[in-house]
Image (spheres, rainbow, N blue to C red):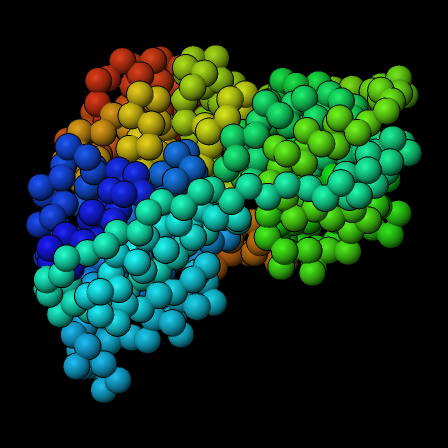
Length: 543
């Protein structure tokens, strides 16, 4: 086999069934091998390497396994870097394979040369450089295995073109047993004691809940403890919105009822969260009166958070063990407190509080969206303030139905829709994207059309960089600079790609357009015209 064939056979040994790529002159042997395995691997050519990486991130979010990204040399690798960073911050598995310059040219600032260890070291889980044809299978296998071990993440592999062109009789490493990390018995007993002695405990559900498919176990744990549940940043599908323990989503906008609940809370149970900066309000959430139980499968995370009970464990065995160790049922007072907070969360998600200035009320639109779309619909949201309307008003009640850029990287939406649809071909996929984000990667509509993916796009057009406009107005009222956008007619643009498009000028038009979009057996677009004054669905300090 040549080196490219070895790469593909190693991928197949690990169950890889999705590749996102931009073809290049140095990865020809890999692409030729993939072309002979199209019945086993879906290979999607995107128009830009950042899009391939965003698509792989979304695929990993839904399927809980790595897709592979193929890029060529430093231009491809630098373009893909934003997606590597996004996946690592989200703890999502992917493997980036860079077809590198020939070995003899290294170290001389050759054409399209970069030191990938220096470039990706700070933003990836690991970076590997293949030194000979005999290492290809071992290193690619190690990268794929590592991407899902412990805390998932992005792994980078660089393979020189001359290695990919060589021949070898490979030995593909056997698939190792999955590492199961369980809790220490003493820590379990201490966690149970802390929960039973607490008055108002709160569970913080993190990214590992979704990755481990631990949603059902989380509900059992919440019911056994009587604790409220807050979901970490962009993890809303980890816990059902309609569950009586739901306290909402810890996003950029801190909500008054959440702040009040955290003030009353005396014990935080961090279950599978690395306690990132958004979730913890820039690391200020934990106060001196809070005790902390922390469960996470990577030891380094514990160095940042002194906990009363710490478990280097996956979440399912930890929740089962702690629940079994509880000797008492939650008190009536705790349950009453929990139910009162949940009631406030439900009220907050109902439209009517925010007075809109324009003709389209996004709160009412999303209320209609909730009622119309199938319950297994996957929501892909780009970064941007328009997405906060979704965060506030859309009700996530099923697992594996949300993906968005935890890093806040714009341009995620359209390629993310590609990755989500490949991950779950039978689910309806809706991409919510602002006008700014669409102008970054909306060209991937060409890939959607070419691959005949039935992705539905909702372009929320408010003619501005909404998030930045909000920041500017908070610092300097009635002033903005560089945030107004003059965009093309997105409806005509969508039609140019070959999509049917519905334009929404008023709230009353939304439901009818959405029903027609759902009836389309293929891609379709809604162009929703918003008023620049209706940037955020939050007021006061929460804005």
